[in-house]
Amino acid sequence: MQFKSYNNISFKKTSYYQELPNKEREVFDILSSVFHFKINNYVAEHLIDWSSVPNDPIYKLIFPRKEMLPADDFKYLSLLYQSGLDQKTLAPFMEKVKQKMYPDVKFVDPSLPKVNGKRVKGMYSNFGTIVSLFPDPMAKTCHSYCSYCFRWIMFDNREAQKNSSYTDPNEPVPFLKEHPEITDVLFTGADPLVLKAQTIKEYINPILDIESVKVIRISSKSLAWWPYRFTTDKDAEELLELFRYIQSRGKHLNFCAHFTHVRELENPVVKEAIDRIRQTGVVIRCQGPLVEGINDTPEDWSNLWNAQIAHGMIPYYMFIEADHNSESCFRIPLAKALYIFQTAQKQTTGLARTVRGPVFMNELHRTLLDGVVTIENKKYFALKSLQAPPNTIGEGNIKLIPYSETIKDVGDLVALFSDQSQVTQIN
Ligand code: SF4
Image (cartoon, rainbow, N blue to C red; front, side, top):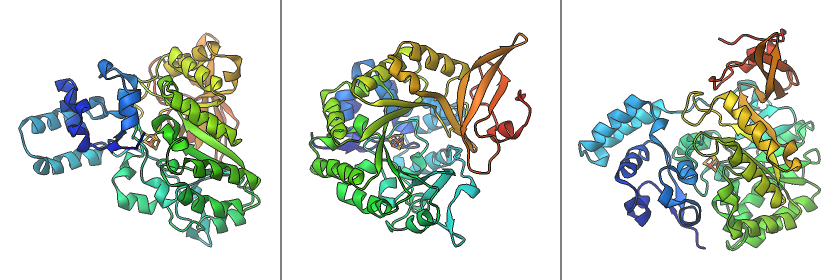
């Protein structure tokens, strides 16, 4: 299959758009001017069940939904849209609403690595032993865009991309040499595997020379969005050869595969792609967010984990969708998230017992929602800080907060885990 992608303008020329229900077409026209949109021919032809739109989970995974905007803003844009103004006249109004929607992504200054007092561009270090790297070409795009992705601000903002990424492949080297405690390097993006194998190699090569780096991680949704990357793409063989080469240099290569729904694993080409990657010796660990309306039942997750295990992959993390306003339409209440996780685990082969979740990351702590405990007839959520930056109080600690059926966020985790008491009140 030859890769072809559609943006908010070219998609309107496809038969898929023409056949959408009228209401959905209007929602698409309005929202795709505010939010990012990209779909490719594989997702359109093989993953979306168009007869189930708008409730189809993969459709919801790609197409923006009106709940992404505050109701008043959606109404305002609808009225403008219905007034028949042309795209150019509408643009400033769309932009005004877009500015308000910038997600609440938290950058924590002390985690920005420096060499000789100078910031290392495109490198982020939340925890003591791992850094995330954003080479400029990897920060640009993905094979398709997920509606819930907070990185949408980068996709059409060249300035933001430049400020948060690096172009010289050697940029991270001095810092990594100065910090032998860093054992893991994560290449992330957008999606690094959109790039040609040769370009990926240029950025990974300098890291392979650093003895103290033991693990190379590549985070990608390409298995779900474009499995041909590993089968029939022109440089598919070269990419697999790169995977072998990284391991031949003594590094563990971890493929962090992003899957959201079991349907992403059902086409034979995905199985073929997974087999080809595994034949190189690479370990594929799977993670994905729990998202309202897309994968919010225990069966969604047990089906997903069972399929991952059947394909020889390791279920790794279930994340709570992060970095949007905690009341965003993608989030579900913590109590429901925990129920889904625990019920799904019971319905899955015992090999899924190692998957961790629901896990969320705010402020400094990567936190596990570990269960519910009852003390003196009162119920509490048990939260465990799985990881925190060095010198941060609280890593490994367990905290109890009052149970609630409805809360979607636990508030300030830094304060929570700095507090010496066992049970902390939330407001
Ligand atoms: S593939 Fe990953 S980076 Fe790209 S849009 Fe989806 S979640 Fe965001």
